[in-house]
Image (spheres, helix red, strand yellow):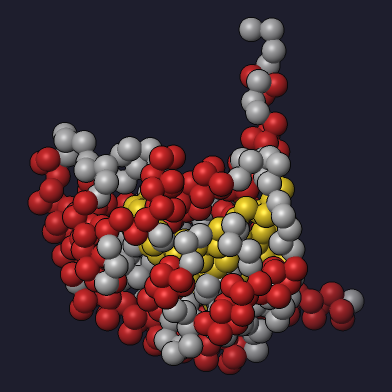
Length: 377
Ligand SMILES: *Cc1c(COP(=O)(O)O)cnc(C)c1O
C-alpha cells in the first residue's frame, strides 16, 4: 500500500470529533480499585422493568433467528398506545441511530444543519459525518432560543435538531414557543424534535408532539427506551413522523438495525406501567433531594424537568469530575457540551444521591481549605 490508511479516509470523517460517552463503572473500578456509582449517563437507576428481563430470558433460546427487521409487534403496540398508524413509526438502535439516519437521508456537504450550542453532541456528529455545514445558535438563559435557531435557517438548511428537554441543561421550551417557531420554518426543512426525556416532563404546556406530526409532513419526533424504560444497554428507540418521511428513512435504515432481544424487551417494558410509575416517583424525589442537598452546599445548578441536573463548578469541570471520581462517583464533565465549568449528574437511587452529595461536600471542602491555605501564604 502506497498511502497510509488515514489518507484514504473521506475528509469529513477525518474532521469528525467523536462522541465521548460517560465512563463505564468497570473502567473506574479497574483503574482506581474502588467501588463506583455511575451518575453520568442519565440511565434509569432502578434498572430495566423486571417484566422486560423475564421476556428477554424467555426469548433467548430463539436468538439464532434474525430479528423481524420491521419490528412489527413493537410498532403495532406503539401505534395503538399513541393512537397513530404503524407506518408512522420507525425503530432505531437507540434514537441516536435515527439522528444519524436523518442526516444521511437529507443532508449532503452542500447543505446546512442547524441546532444549538450547549446541546446533545450527536447532532453535531451526525452533521459532520455527512460533511454538512453545521450552524449552532446560542442558548438563552441555558434554554434553547428558538428565535436564534430560526435566524440561522437559510435556503441551504435541510435539517434542524432540537432537544426538548435539552441535554445537558435539563431545561425545556413550551409548546407555544415551538408553535411560533414552526411558523417560521419553511416546509422543506426537516425538524427533528428529540424527546428522549418525554416521560419525565410534568409541565402541562410541554409538547403537542403528535399534533405536530399530524400537521406537518416534514417533522420527526424521537423517543427512546434508554431513559425511563431502563433499556439503554439494549439500544432501542423510535421516531414518529409522516408515513412518507418514515418510508424515506427506511430506505437508509439497515435491515436488522434493532435486535430481536431489544424488541421483546421494549414490548414488555411498555406493559410495565408499575415500573414506569416507580421510576418517575424515584426521579421526582431524587430531583428534590439533589436540589436541596446542592442548595445546602451552596452549589449553583439549573432546575431541571428531566432526570439529571447541570451543576456549575468553581474550578474546571475536569478537576471536579476527577475529584468526584476518586470518591467513587462518576458524573459527566460538560466541556464538550459547551460548559467548561459544569458537570451533569443523573438522578440515582436515594442512597446514590446521598453518596454523591457527600462526595461533592468532601471535594468542595478540600478545595476551599486548599484555596484558603494558598491565600494565607
Ligand atoms: C439520552 C438521549 C438520547 C437517547 O439516546 P439513545 O440512542 O436512544 O440511547 C437522545 N437524545 C438525547 C438528547 C439524549 O439525552
